[in-house]
Length: 221
Picture 1: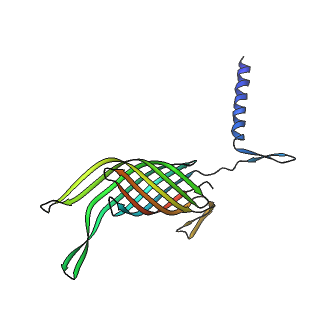
Picture 2: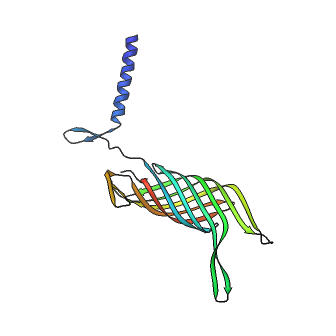
Picture 3: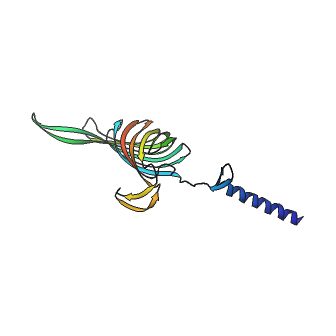
C-alpha cells in the first residue's frame, strides 16, 4: 500500500513538473520533424510618471501629478496624486497708464486616487482611459465683506478620470541617461512622453491638461 502511494505521489509530481515545463515551451511542427522551442519570456507592463499641467476648469492654476501604473492584458490599474494651486493673475492700477501684475491665491486642491481602465499599446505609442475613486482636499481662500482674509478647508470623495496618449521606444534598446549616456545592454526599460487630460467629478469638480514623462516598461518587449 505504501509503495502504491509512493508511486502515485511520484507520478503526480513528475506529471506536474512536466506540465510546468511544457507551459514554457512552444511546439513547432515541420513537415519532417517536431521541434520543441523555448517560449520567450516577456516583461511586466509597469511604469511611473510625473506631469506638469494647468487647470482648465474648476481650480485654474498650475498642476503637478504623479502616478504608478500596472497593466495586465488590456486592464490598467493606476494609483495617482494630483495637486493644483488655484491662482489668478490680476493687475493693480497705479495710474491710467501704469499697472503692476500680481497673483491672487484662491487656495489649492489635492487628490489621492485609485483608477481602473483600459490601455492599448501599439508599436511605440499607447492610448488609455480610466475611472476610479478618490479622496480630495480643497482649500478656498477669499476676503469677506470686511476685507479680512478667510480660509475654508473641505474633505470629500470624488470620481476621478483621465485620458492619456504616450510615446515610447518600439523595441529593446540600451537605456540612456538624459537620453544621451548609454548604460548596460538592450532593455525594454525606458522613458516615455505624452499628454494627459485629468479631472474629477465631485463637490469641487475640475479638469486639467498636462504633459507627462514616464519611466518603466511601457509594453511587452
